[in-house]
Length: 89
Ligand SMILES: [Zn+2]
Ligand SMILES: [Zn+2]
Image (cartoon, rainbow, N blue to C red):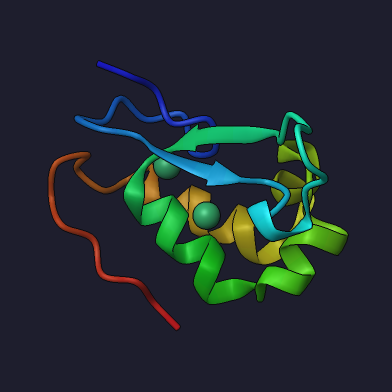
């Protein structure tokens, strides 16, 4: 099974998160993306606006250093990979 780049769990499917939103990219530019599970993906978009993601969290390292992300990852690692996980606000 694929492994989420953020929480490191084996999950049934991964989703592609654009570290730099498509709207920010210059024409023909290769935009960095990460493959993460859908709960992680939803959580990122709940925690941060697209502005913040593009400005402050445009690498996986920066996301991992964020306290809220770390708390979420710690929590999600205890959840069963296939159970539907509600996004906490
Ligand atoms: Zn994940
Ligand atoms: Zn995304």
